[in-house]
Image (cartoon, rainbow, N blue to C red; front, side, top):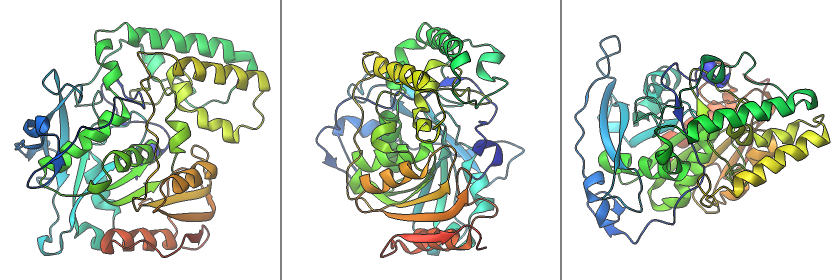
Length: 398
């Protein structure tokens, strides 16, 4: 996401939430056409909402509006409990050139996205801003969207060393601390909701947002974990997927297997809790010096999570022909090049924008992004046409 602290793994300061069991219930039921969307008739009351848009805050621009909608806790039983989902938007100032809405997710798992429209308004080219209403949201269980609370201490949510490598000397203590943190959440008042705070349901929430806004299709930008969320959306709702930009991508069919709880509040407690440890297992790709015993213990934890009924209900396999633009630095410390290529291969209709010599996590809409990347992504968002072949950009070319 185009915010430096986000890319450093620091979420916007807010309420503690548990975000993602990257797995979920069975496929969506047979659909019934409506004026703007295909969805099961039993979801009509959610897709047919008319949100009351109001200025988000007195210290933000009047054009930045917020609203609250409801979504089912369990999409398999939409007649049951509901959650409140907080959404935001900044409408295009050029309606005559408007293409639709551009939803975004800054990553995590666990980053709040309600303020994304404000950031993107200052980061995107005028040609892109003219074509979209910018839309953001706090994912379910996070921020202003029915947040979950686990009663963690400040040290548990904001460790002094949020990103640390695996070390044999500290691994046993790290995993013990992780289990203690995870236990607090599984024993919390919101533990009954935990199986439903997951990527698959968040993708379904995204489609409700699309329907509520009266759009037939959804365009999207996701960074880091947000690429997985976007990929799951394309798998569940290929007919509703429009222009999809996935920046600094995870491997969708590796990242999504066995991910348990992910905690976030103020800063990502990476490796502090057991679930976050599992969430970042892709780091094994580029931790070549990690001791073999530590790696083995790590994968044992992954396997254990795979067998936990409460936390794992079957990963969403991404394998479709939806068009997308995958943007990837050569040297990304969090989502390595191998995972970006894996996302490209899983989305057969995608094109890869490879930044040769590129360093750091996230590329597009950031200061100093190579002109080649900006030009390629802008052209896709404004015109809707993917490049005819994959694109290689030089990081040193500005």
